[in-house]
Amino acid sequence: MTTGVPPGRRLGELYQAKAELFRMLGHPVRIRVLELLQAGPTPVRGLLAELGVEPSSLSQQLAVLRRSGIITATREGSTVVYALAGGDVADLLRTARRILTGVLSDRNLLLAELRADNGGSGAVPESLRSPAAEPRAVQAPAP
Image 1 (cartoon, rainbow, N blue to C red):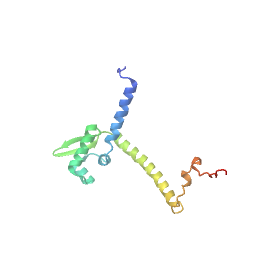
Image 2: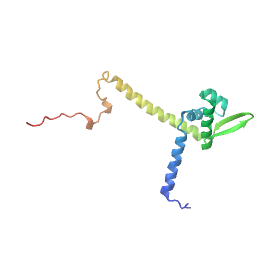
Image 3: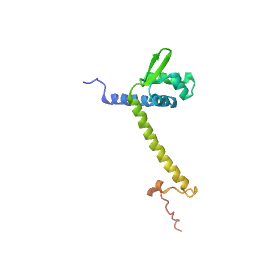
Image 4: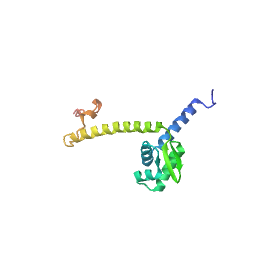
């Protein structure tokens, strides 16, 4: 079944939707909320206690997450309890943590190598040298 929409346009819309998802995740408070909700449904007062942000700020961030469908809200008496909408969010956060751990480990290795570099002599560490970047002898012009 075709929709009459050119495949390239559908593909562009797919990438736009993915970009919107990552943009929605692009706020530290939202990420922390999602991490906290991995432990299970949590009332707003519990989130506020853990996050230490202003209630109005948390409310704004929760609204963004709710609109995206990534979290749900239920009312229990006068309390609003938030939960992850599905397990895929927790999987995404675990994957992001693994990626970030790898990236930071690589940076720490590079930092250690730079610090060990003859007390900061300015020499390029061996692991960063490429044959094309090696210094070449400069020939003096012929008289």
